[in-house]
Length: 141
Image (cartoon, rainbow, N blue to C red; front, side):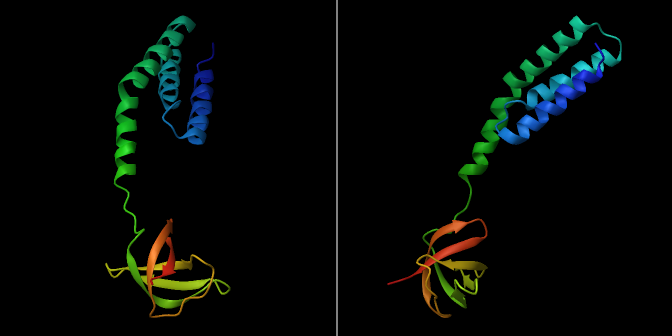
């Protein structure tokens, strides 16, 4: 078998991994590259398949738990501003798509009104949702 087929396997598995993003097929990318190297240096098809399986399964068994733990740690420590107070520093106008608020840490954020109504500058608001770099706020009562 032409060893370049293993490169094709590695590329396909990489594309699948990018789509899934779950550390499922990345190990077969590594296995495919290892089998390519074995085939490139003249190993038989049987040896290439064995190298592919051993390297892929070893990476899956040994590295996947570490990667999953690392990913979960990042998710657990994700800061959120939901529930914090802020002051409107630029009028929030849903029609004009403008508006900024300042949080207690003196950071300013693009802001949206939770009820879709304008909120004037100087008003005290509470963050009810965070959408990436935009804060959804409502007037504090």
